[in-house]
Length: 66
Image (tube, rainbow, N blue to C red; front, side, top):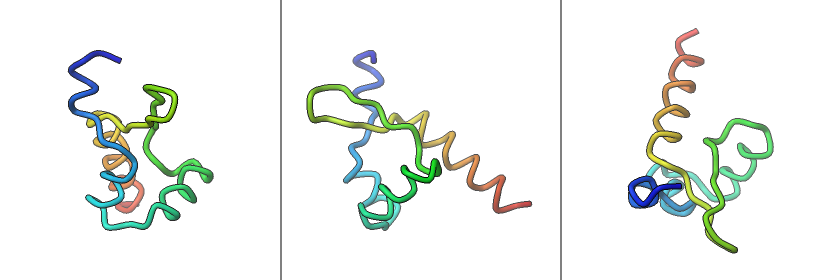
């Protein structure tokens, strides 16, 4: 992961706060394959890049439009 991607990445907690969901909901989505891709960038740090979040949002909007 480049420095630019790291700067534009969100933690899982930040993602949940932005989308007004509980972390437990996020982990349920992750287990079901409905969450955005999560990258491990350290021993305990997991992030979601802005690009991955945008891709996730576009996919969800497309599914809702069907």
